[in-house]
Length: 258
Image (cartoon, rainbow, N blue to C red; front, side, top):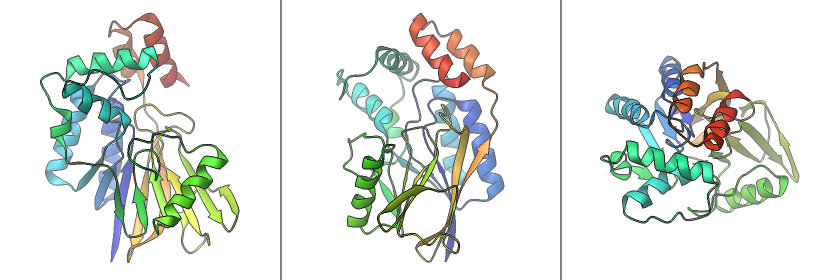
């Protein structure tokens, strides 16, 4: 059996980018979408993003894995007004702005959230293969090596994550850990693989995109990154008009202009 999976992450309330990504996934005729969380914060289209995901869910298979930003809203809407860790002031302002926009809507009840997910030999979570609530980034060699060991202990060949907003394919062959541009089981004879999908709504590095996985008989057969060109003008205008503090507005705009 062969299944084609589209993986998206870190939408961050950017409905314009999400619409383009979902249209791309439909053209690819994926069997399932895995959303790796962080659907809100930073952008100024939270309700629009929720509506797009709701509409897609009505007729398509989609898995929702929760991220740290999703957990912020779960906790705040339950009445816990303390964040689980210290946030930069601009992030906290963006979260509180978003919370007011969705105040009559329970994000936790909106979708069937999971802490992690797997298909065959491929494991999915928001940030890394460690326990839920560990939001460590997989960027440094030591962290990648630790994550690969964790996946190996769990008997997974590959791990697919978001969180860092930076698209990345990292392979392990023996003791060597190195970056590759794409994966096919026929061409890449490796022991393990880590994939970062990048970000739909606030890309850092290689731009907006998503990952397509093909899994055959429970084993990852192919993986590649699909990049999209997104016009962020509307996103920038919305941020400028949101009455954020100047520092917050400048930081959010700067991320989209990189």
